[in-house]
Amino acid sequence: MKKLTQADFQERRDILAGEMGLRSIAIIATSKEAMRNRDADYKFRADSSFFYLTGFAEPEAVAVIETFDSEEDGYTYSLFCRERDREMEIWHGYRAGVDGAVDDYEADEAYAIDLLDEEILEKLQNKDKLFYRIGQQADFDARVAKWIAAAGGESRKGASAPAQVIQLDRIVDELRLHKSEDELALMQLASDISAEAHTRAMQTVKPGMMEYALEAELNYVFGKNGCVPSYNSIVGGGENGCILHYVENNKELKDGDLVLIDAACEYQLYASDITRTFPVNGQFSPEQKALYNVVLDAQLAAIDAVRIGNSYKEPHHVVVRILVQGLLDLGIMQGNIDEIIAAESFRQFYMHGTGHWLGMDVHDVGAYKQDGEWRAYEEGMVVTVEPGLYIAPDDETVDEKWRGIGIRIEDDVAVTKAGPRVLTAAVVKSVEDIEALMAN
Image (cartoon, rainbow, N blue to C red; front, side, top):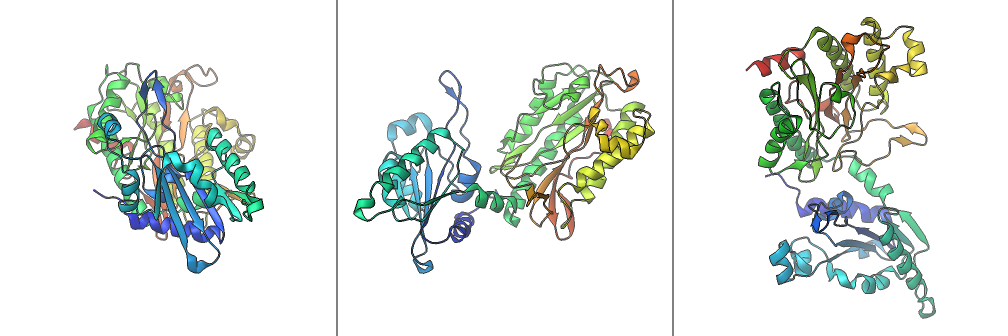
């Protein structure tokens, strides 16, 4: 099983410490446990940026990185975590404890989380800058403010609190935006598993099946490979495919309808994101096929535009022009293509963007613009490419034969020196390949 090593996490901390500069401190907390209902919790999932720097997946943990007066002094990595507790471990599972934080997670220092308020004050003193993820957790923001005030209150003893508080995400988000080869390998595994799930869905769907039953086929593949969904799965049959974030998944799949599945898993906290649209009965109708091929043509051209140096927005511009021309050719829209694009009247049928960053979060971190301009693609970035067309079932401006058809095709694309690398290529998407697969 492919996993990142402690050397990978240390390398990230090394880079962060270098970016922080001398006499600085970074404080980063993991996610809070979340209640599902009454006394039942959601399964805990570590905060992505916290895990990115530590590899530590337990709740109630805070990482602290300190730099000192000279580069020769290096930096110190401290981890505050839960102590070992036999009774709690019987109920809820094993903990690393402070010894495990040092031995297994290579912290230079480890403390019980209960000592955080006490120990952090000394660490804050005589630092010029505090790097902190401002705005992530309101209650933790308040604690940090109290620490800064308390550390500043020691000035009569010759100590000082950080004079600058800097958004830590500014550094970490940029690090996360550029994936290493090891990270891309994890994302490839997530993509391959998700592709297997979509293939299974195409092979098992049949008229009369419930949307949630088809979702269960996806979840089986995710689960048997040790994965969980990276977002709430969308399984929309017929007109439900026109609802962008349809997650009820509780209707019957009908003969003659398409089903749109937007579902994928995460592997070792790295996400994939796939959408496929296919006929419930295995055969596209003429109208479905015509619209589908417009979307597919747009997607293939957009993928080709995901190249080093191209603007992030270039695939969207490519998609819009091809979709609009296709709608004009089919008689669904009328007018001049340039005027339609300028007025954005195509949004009646295509109302979302063409992609987003992908990584540890399905809508991953990283700025889309720099100095007010759409940034250029760089090696190691991963983006989704997901054009679609959605003809609302009650849209009386369109011939009835088109109504209620929703189509989206989505793949995950890594930016490489050799050109776009489609991580999710293992699941078919041409009309011919889909129909052939579903016929077997």
